[in-house]
Image (cartoon, rainbow, N blue to C red; front, side, top):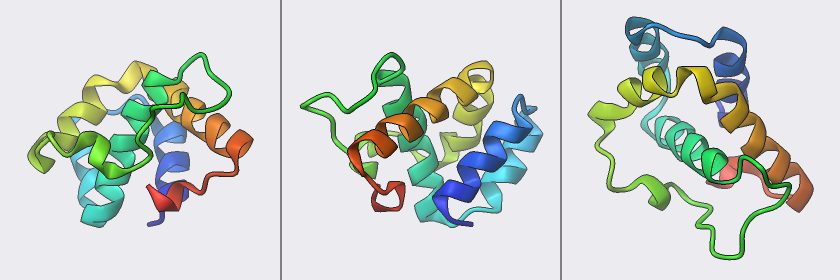
Length: 103
């Protein structure tokens, strides 16, 4: 499932239980799992922005300190804010011409 499909699925199914988050993340390739987690954090850091900050790292390197075993827990914990975080990254990406597949 490409990153854009994963984002749309998360936005339409949130909030998720921990089991649902785990099942969802298990359906994604490791690359898309990393992209989703990076998108959540980058989106959070740009929640009130329309473009990227100058020092933003648009890469999964943004979350390289987070072990993959924690990804489902993060999706679960960010549940109430997922739609806003993912909407934020989509907005900034559109306004700057950035393709989220390049995360």
